[in-house]
Image (tube, rainbow, N blue to C red; front, side, top):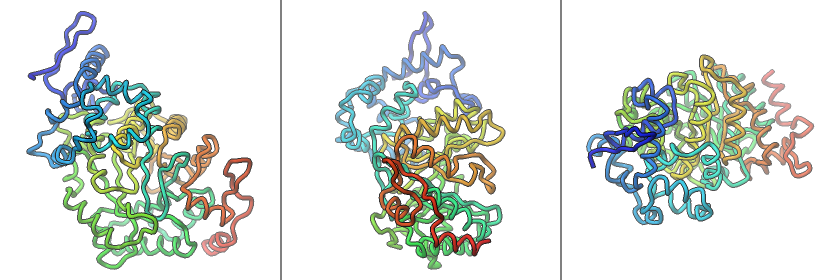
Length: 464
């Protein structure tokens, strides 16, 4: 096949490659215009979407968007593809696949069994011809459950990452944020710090601090310092109490190289984490963060649209059986996602694609202050993702990260979503919250306790 074409309104639109069809079928976003791969008009976008809908799913196994010979992510995708799992939908076009996903046959069991047979390009393709409600309807069918010291991703539950960042890594400031977050029922996904320091000794001290808090209060959760995977490996070698191994990842080999990683380095980090044997209910211990635009920002996108590059990152994540994966959806800036509309669409796409691929997906629902977005937009995305069955979100004091300088979701936002949609924390964490009198059952809903638990009262007095 030498190209693809489709006629719309008497005009015959031609696309030279599957990569071009995918890019021009994408809903408009600033990053694709920056990369000069976006459709030049709404008419061309519609033509590309209609063309894409007619392409057989199996075509994505025959025409690689990034060459197999030059990209290890492509090799991972193709070499790990499960043909038997793919068989139930192997005869479908992209459009037919959309219709199947929206039907009753695509229930939780069917979608779970299908996940190993889907490639990132397939799920990215079908997402491009789906409405917002389609992305939500299908994603909420899928549950991807992961475990370390608690169980994340069960139906009817939503976890949170407690993010107690501090611009100087001051212990008292971090501890105060942790206590504040716990009092709002946050922290069951992870208590995770973005460190201001990149020194291994500083990372080890933060790990010891987190571990001391978790162990002292017997909290059924996990700690993580979001440092480079090689620093985590060195911290393990030094005997630091490390729970989760973190790394930012992308969907191309070149983009991952810009992060100082490859699949072999991630494998080393994964094995180092397993050697710690610190999980109590499971051994999912990798934590990955992603975001649309990361490959383009490293000039490592190979002409592939940013949403498809993002979906390819989920194949990297899937290989290492992670506890947590989240798209930091609006963090890179308006060069890639210009406004609230684009951020909302991207967050729902990322969640949909990851869940179909069997990845335990969360979202940092966020924006930077120079984007055309505000907290109302984040409230909309928060509510939509809660409806779609998001595994976890971020919890940060006042929605304002004072270290990374961006706007995201607060401890209160998690409480709002749980109360409005009837969502609960991870079961082990919920039991702990009840024991500590932080959250109580009241009329079938979880509500904040009336009194400050004595252990935290003493902790706050010490910090003060």
